[in-house]
Image (tube, rainbow, N blue to C red; front, top):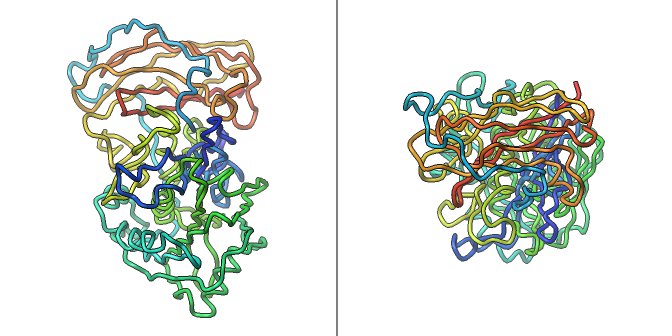
Length: 485
């Protein structure tokens, strides 16, 4: 089973902890903004992208990820999840930990475990030196904030971490970006816009960009240009991703796409400003889309792609882990405090006073460290299954071994499991029954998970679940999936 997820940041509805699309709950959801703790004046809006599963199999699915769930989407283009729903997954864990603290690898860190997933490069163009063009509309109170953010963000420690190791087919790697200019659109934003990830489809967003390049108000693009367009709260963007449709601040909090302008396929990111009640952060959404656009700018290209999750890893794709931001946006679903909490979530990092999105790093994974960077302080820890994919029919069950691992000595951490269906509909009966024989782990700990199919497994998307490892405010996860064949 192959699920193509792309770059929309899913929105999480704080009133009901609802993720509209499980397959996209990345991208990707942000917690309540942290203006006080981060100093980010834009903290009242934004989003995290996820990437919706939409057009499976090709790059054309930009990521309307996330249905209500990133960037993020997620959950696509995105999104997007919420914490506190894990209890509905049918997960249980006996309070007694088996051999937490024991290291079966004889003191080696990390203990031997299933190989982690990686982003795979599809030989497409990257934004090697992004030129961030910040676009705002009349009377935008935060225009100077967005402009300062765009001028700075691709030169920071955060950028060095999230971009490290992403190189093109000539072995040129993504480096620091530059200020590509500030555009103050002279006319008020329209109430509605449309867009599509399919080349040739009608798109008033693409028409808007092309018209402003033609009249000289937007700088002409080159292969490194990224137009980052911040829409006011009164505008609604409708995105078509394959056969799926999504709306800003309902199914996604941001996305990126591309448009043909002359001989250049120009990349752009759309950042709607959603109601503060949704608890979405503008700069989290923008940073999510900027790093995803740099690593996979041509989302409408059906012949190649940039960096995208390994298509053989169904479990990761099924939880919305498409582009680099989507994997980490999902952390918000499982973090301490959940929706409505203040301060950066487990999917976020504070850089130079701005709250930004963590992102998946192949480099860090290959070095046996945390996949989402910048990483939390202290050793990285998680619990991996012996196998990610199980083939089961209704009524069948199977017990698998799990292994705790960390990249250094640390205290025991908590372990639980969640049926991802609980994120899209927390009131529905979970498809999977998930039972752990222990609730604590450490490097080398062996646990056992019994997976039972209680309902009907979706024949296309399967029934994904996640193994969550947490200690205080630090949370990590590893996905699994049940399929029927």
